[in-house]
Length: 327
Image 1 (cartoon, rainbow, N blue to C red):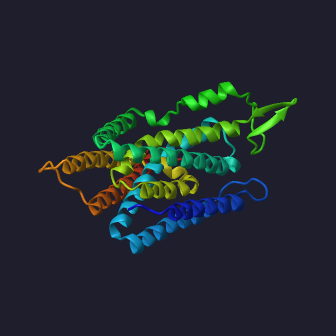
Image 2 (image 1 turned 180 degrees about the horizontal axis):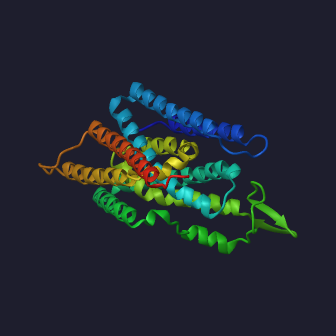
């Protein structure tokens, strides 16, 4: 499937238009907190937009490509939920006022979308030229899945370590001590300085790019089409900001989500290796159809989410039972 240039322009232009309207609606007037009601409306809108896009693919290019898009979208959206834990830690560490958190997320996600687009283009070109990279991607995903489980068991997912990009920005630019509204730069005594708002935006964007090291190979395990890879990533990222506010405290209750994501990455890693072997005419290696991948991904997320909520409810009841009665 070689999409014409106009299709790329239409999709990218449409996404940018929606994001611009989103930013204008949320940012007009005085800065204010993003409400749960607003978040639920926007999450529903972006999910409906992704479903509509998948339906258009189904009608125009067939069920296989539409299935690849939905599998990729669900995978990227699921991995994004895990990313929200780190975003929550970043927001807390930099003490971002709640009224400005939505803008931080939007700009950070836009930066990530641009960088992911470049990464996808490079990855697609590399995979087309060097087919052995599928084995590397597959092994990397399995290794990542094992590390996710290990880190979760050790509690390392509660930490945030500044990456090299963020450390360089801190050294290269003078930074104000506190926030100056939503401004990213200000003049102090005639000297241009950046504010913590810019620092945290870069932290969100660069951290999300690091997450792409897991998610991009994962989606290439579901489809080799760069157009599907990009659109699935774009639609997943677009709804990420509102999902952050909608889930809120629920994030802490999704205790098994990391295990589910690890299983998904491990499954896709094995699938990549098997399909590479199948393409090399290894007789025993099967080609796993997209409907199987979609079923495994969807079932895994449902099971881990439900199990997490059940455990959270049981723990809550135990906590209530152990509390001393007030006289």
